[in-house]
Length: 350
Ligand SMILES: [Cu+2]
Image (cartoon, rainbow, N blue to C red; front, side, top):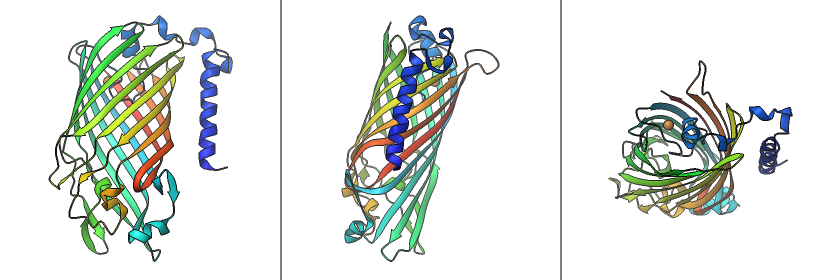
């Protein structure tokens, strides 16, 4: 069976499990082991941090409370797209001498959160990124480029605007600082050359990232919406500006036990094209160096599992696994499509 249909079947199964267990008949489960979100207060709800780890700023902390977290995120891109159609490498070779065949991005993220007061939570995030891109030439020879280093530091304020059962609304404003390099180079045919935009580690300029979170407690589920925009405020030192990004997410979280929940996230993103261009890049060599091949839209489904401990020896610990794949994607020009993403995260509240 084709991978995509396997994934779709897998997710149908996943939703069936969600539905069956939510009626309390699944797995011979006792009703009293189920958490009913309506029976706990919003404070407790946020305190238990049952909201998905990867939905940025989807929880707050109370005054004086600290949280540290570590996340490992992985993304693989493979297979060329033109708009939403798959195309083969020969089409690429008509306009470029090299075709990227696969890209992988690995991120280690460290995050710190602090409850300034019961409404305002502050957050700082630092990432270390490792990227690699495999290439194919028309004569079938191959080569791989790599880059690694710290990414852009993000500072965020998260303000709880409205909190009244059964919902809460929070706004956030984040600033991303250009600590990630935009001058990564690697050896290509014996020469150190500047790597294309997607292999760089930062945006190169300060960006503003406003966002909003809405969370609703239904009887058996908790669900929410999250929206965020990334706006680089100026051209960077290499004379380009990455396009604005818009992000809209809807998620639903279902408790099985007081220590376990499952999450389904529908994640939509729009990327605007790159403005300007880095003149060190040769646009005729590889599609990734050509800004005509930038920007696009994607809708992905992400399935996750959360465990958390509210008491006992591991109190305050939380672990999440998440796996995602695209349901729809469309790109401007020629670009590698996203194949899958996965992440594992740990958080500890003090
Ligand atoms: Cu936190």
